[in-house]
Image (cartoon, rainbow, N blue to C red; front, side, top):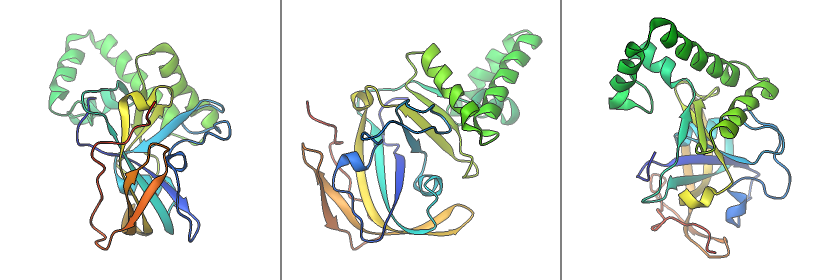
Length: 240
């Protein structure tokens, strides 16, 4: 996937009165080894992103809490390789994939060009990996799926998979190694997130970041309009 306008979200539930001060409070934990997650073994550093704000809030288990939401984007002129777990199965079952989109017919034609037993093997493998990753909550098993993809396909920097907590949504687990080569921060907002039901939220943010210093310190400013988002242009990336 190449750089564009699509934003990938990450949310953190905060204590009342809390406010992140630096970029390090928006990304992966740098002060302690990574804990076991759905798509990462213990000690393997990754960052989890979501397709939409509601998905990110749901993944952070927000109900009626203060939360910070960060938008990440692929930098202009850059691209990342994503392994979408379950994409073949979705195209086969529905005719259209989340990532293939209008090009889903190309995948269908590929499967049709295969011998039936070969096509079924590909589909069964994709369905099996999907089941191992999101069909249960045993992270000792699910984490090995993403790890195997990263280790066997070094060009892959992210694995996409269906959200367990948000119906119809997609999550991304991204390697932190070389992360800033391709990604940047496009917006940061802070406010009260209230879960309305079925994974939908009312997010009344009262502050936004209108600048990030080279040190990574965040500069907050009030945002009276709850529907407005302060966009950082250009995207913020660490300076060397």
